[in-house]
Length: 304
Image 1: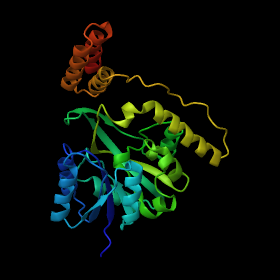
Image 2: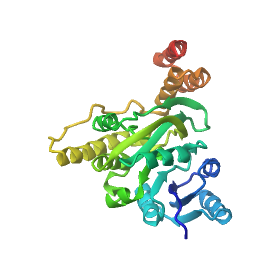
Image 3: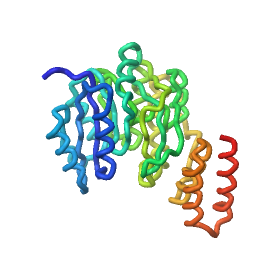
């Protein structure tokens, strides 16, 4: 079989509500010379049926059975099957904008010293309403500086594009760093080449109350510290006892709604900001800080 320019790794578990939109965003890419390795990881909804239907109508798609062993196993399974010289990540609930893959491939092709590249994203809520943009640093040194401070979005994982040989040489993703497998990978990649981000917004990054970034934040902090201390050891530095941030302030769904409200207000999305301020207030209307949130949203909206 002819080698495609790009292999897309798409792990899927219980994503039926969002998967058709994610698939449509890949089909709409201006770069069409790709294969998609969709790893079905033990879904209990109709995700498997959606993937099998896609595979039947598009010869570029291969559905692999992940066996419900988790995202790290799924990604490494896809990596083992990848044929292309470059790999792109994609999550089953996100949306790649039409030029995303083409822009990243072009950048990687003209920057041979770059081993991995991400992009800017728009954070969206579960139904696709815009919360705020994220523009990661584009320069390698700044990206590494943010990584060694524990920064989780130095490169946004579902925007990642990486050279296949490099990823395989590093042994792929490591199971011991599940839930921060991307952070660990970026540190190891930075040892063998440059990291970069494209500044443009090229993906809609969907947020959920049940995401690991919310439910496993404290565990993630411990694992980031472990990965970072391995990095420091490789570079001859003393280990750290803790990272700059500790416990999450997102302890409840109400806290998460308040956080989304503030993010949307700072980005000028006042309607979404007031919506989530209202939802936060409705859940804890007896707490003064929930009423104060409306004034905070108003002040941020005026500044944006």
